[in-house]
Length: 121
Image (tube, rainbow, N blue to C red; front, side):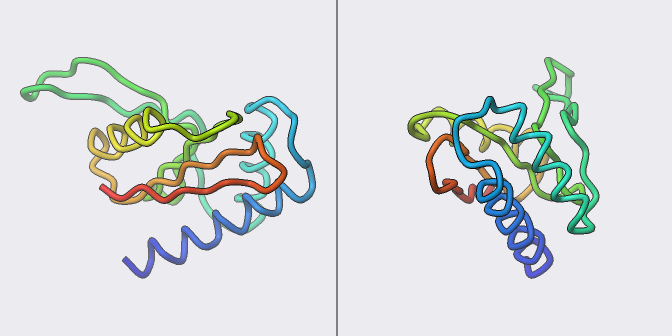
């Protein structure tokens, strides 16, 4: 988990850096693109809009696209919403289960201070 904690710490720092530089009020895509730039600047490998398959009884039944997959270990889901709601947590938890990942970060850029929630599978 130590590796995940270190990656998480860098992602959180990058999110605060983006928030400090851009402030609130932009569309989600702007923060998505800025966070990608910052994560790469921090030396992390990322995959944007990473397609992850969903299986049911060993049959492919769908796919979803993680906003950002960092170091092939941490799923980052971005929001620009008034409040993070339980549906956002459920969505990220499902993504973690489907991809067999342990850690996800839910990042909301809609407030003056960026809001970050850890989700563990």
